[in-house]
Length: 181
Image (cartoon, rainbow, N blue to C red; front, side, top):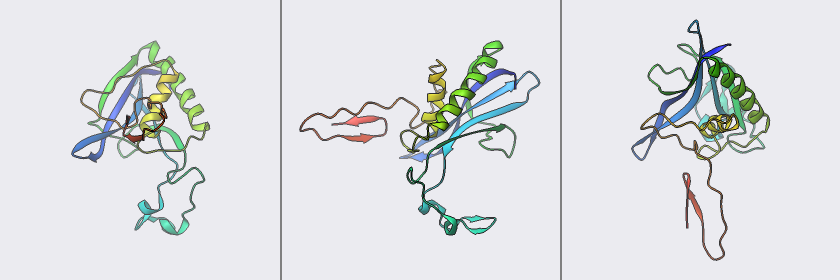
């Protein structure tokens, strides 16, 4: 695809304590209006999230095999046509345009390579840290883009994780992106 525009999208995904959190993904559009998405997500769902779900073969929990990387497996990257009924399609998702014109084509090619490399690293998926939002923002950072979220949107894990510093005699616990001592 020869992208003419690349947008960072934020789609409402749920609420935590009354605050709406958003799932981030990228959408590229070519000159003809055709759109393609790039998203990150978990390799699998934890067993407790499969209860009662059905697949084409029956009960999803019957075929469950835990991932050695943890309950959600590793971060996976996917891309495809951005169209109604497709993955992450949300006609009311907030967006921030990251690039247009020739810069968009270069960014789209670069971010696809960065996302593939990120997926190849087999990073364990952490829904509140290094998860889908972190992976999209990290792919952009690897391309030299420091993207801002769309206004008034909260995307857990989107920021760089604060380093955990161990101080003698001080207990530490992580609350979202902050570290509390």
